[in-house]
Length: 444
Ligand SMILES: [Zn+2]
Image (cartoon, rainbow, N blue to C red; front, side, top):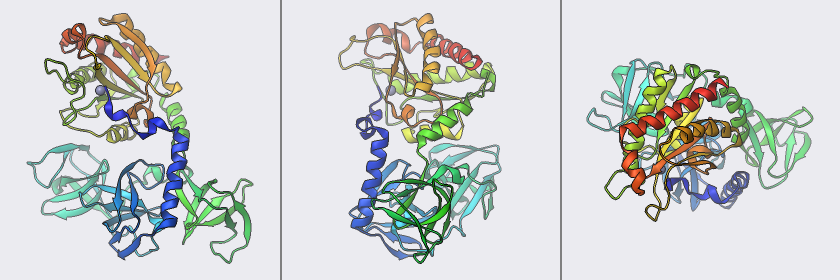
């Protein structure tokens, strides 16, 4: 079961939801303002303002902040402010609501990881929890220094890394790919807006853009966005009547999915295995106390070994009993450019013994081939009944730009299933099925 998969997205078509969010944001922008307290912090004047995981309207909302809340500004990018909340979470708020040009990213420092494999910790001490691992040459945004530690941004959260393993520079060594201009659009607000020949209200009006129109973003000049018109001309639209957004992720997904099928052999492929749940989230549970999170992890670890033996590059979204948000799981998939993302789950029904067996879920039509190929072997090799391939509106599938499937590998409150699922032999059998499926998928 995946309770976390149920959210607002389920009840609205993606596009409609996206537009609704834009309308809401613009509504907030018009109805209220954010006032700048000083160069390093802003105070929220709106009754409620979305904080997003990235600098653009297409990023998920991580939380909301309320009126009069003070946010520390860490960085600025494309008219968005990276802010730290009082609980140390880091997110982004729409900066075009703030009339401010003092903040620049000039004092932003970057760290390059010099150790082979370095732990990222929750606090500035080796006693604190490990949030993850970074590898040599990884680049991190440095937020603060404290004694022997740097506070850094890790998967959108504030975390710490020991100074011994980091080399600091003033600028990132590589341009982040998400800053490529072709991935951004200027979205016109709720009113028709003039496109002018120069970046000034004195400029000649070339044309008027319709409400909610999306134009290709070419650059920023003062308070103006340079855009490309449909007839090929370029013009400027004021940033107070428009906003910068990432191109609809659906298009990006299509491109990435085509590219990622370039792997023609399992040994060339990057596989991200996602053991469901973990930490404070146990998932489904049997009457005898077997928890979904534990058997998902043990199955995932066997699968990792099997795929590595076949030459694949394999990663896990978690390799211990830690809580990883659904958003971070998807982030890891994108970051790794996974050729396949396999989420491992076990199920439970409200009524015991009402269901049995395995089911394979996919979300996009382009993922059906992957789902079918893996499921054929699950059905063929058993030992449990196979319930076929189904559409599943799960967060880790829906938001995943990489080819992704979710496997439910048995019911924890079915007497037959529970007698098998925690055994090594069952887990090895389903792992062999997944391996065979992936092998065929990549060679076809
Ligand atoms: Zn689950």
